[in-house]
Length: 330
Image (tube, rainbow, N blue to C red):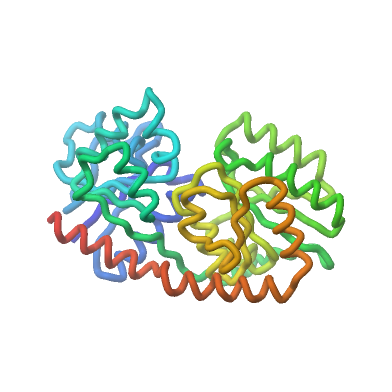
C-alpha cells in the first residue's frame, strides 16, 4: 500500500511538518510506502503521485490545492488542525471551503474528543466518519551540537513559529515580570518567523530584553533534543492549538510544561499532575515561580509527564490506528 501525505508549508519547521514526518516514518516501519507532497509551494504539482490513498493535513489548505488539481482523487482522508478549528471553520471567507473539504473526505481525523465535539457542532453530517487518534511522539537523541544554558539560571524555552496565534509577545511580557523578581530567569525562543509583522514585534522585544531573552531562530527538528535537555521548563502560550508536537516531545523528555488553556493543550496536560495549565497572567506567574523554586516538584511533574506520554502518545500506535482507517477505505 502507498499513501501520499499532503501538507502545507512542508519545508518550514512547523507542527504539521513534524507530524507528517513522524507519521511517514512510523508507517514505513509497518511496510507502508509513503510520499510527502507540499501543497503550498509557489508552483505545486498539478496532480498527486500515484497512490492508494491521499491523506491531507489541514482541511482548508488541502481544499485550496484540491480545487486546482487536474485529476481530483476520489478518496482522501483529512487531519483537522488547530487552525482549522480555531479560525478557518468560523471565518466567513474560509468556512465554506473548510466544510466542503471535510464533507468530501471519506474519513476525518482529529487529535482529541474535545476537538471532535467542536467539529460536530459545526458540521454534524460528518459524525459517522470522524476518528479520534492522539498525536504520537518519539524520544529525541541528544545531537552533537549541544545547547548550553547559562550556569546558575533557570531556562524557560518557548518553541513556536512566530505568528499571532502563538502569542509570543505576551510570553515575553509575562516573563519580564518574573525576571524582575528573579534575575536568574532566562527565556529562549525557538522557531521561524512565519508572519512578518509579528516577527518585527518579537524582534524589538528581544532587542530590549536581550540580557535575559534570546531568539535562536529555526532549529532543525533533529537537534531539538539538546534544547530539551538544557531547558528547565517548556512553555506554550498559544491562543489556539491542535495538539502541539513540542509539548509532547518535552513531556516525553521529562520536562515540566507550563501551557495556556486551549483545547490542544488541555488534551495533553492535566493541570497539577503532568504539567501546569494557566488561565491568565497571574496564574502563569504563580506557576512559573512555583516551578522555579521547587526542584522536587520539577522532577515529580517531569516524571509524571514522561510516563503519561509513553502510555498515551506512542507514534507506533498512532500509525497502526491510521493504517486501520486506510485499510477500510482501500
